[in-house]
Length: 79
Image 1 (spheres, rainbow, N blue to C red):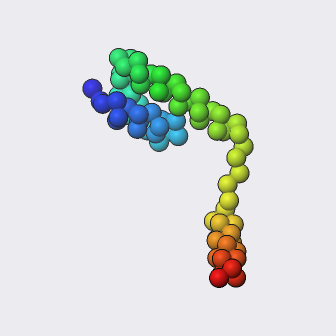
Image 2: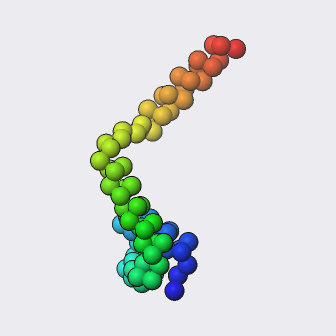
């Protein structure tokens, strides 16, 4: 039987389709017995669903780099 800590890790990996078949099996067996982890898994799935619905836009690498350069330039002009 896996620990709750390991179950949480596998739960997260499963959400992003990164868990292997054996890990998924271990998680299912753990969730069958552990109601705390079952609730964690349910809430984690809900959070993932809400995040995907949020349509959050992140910066590309180039945009991050440009922003970093701009902030550095602004910091240099204030000195």
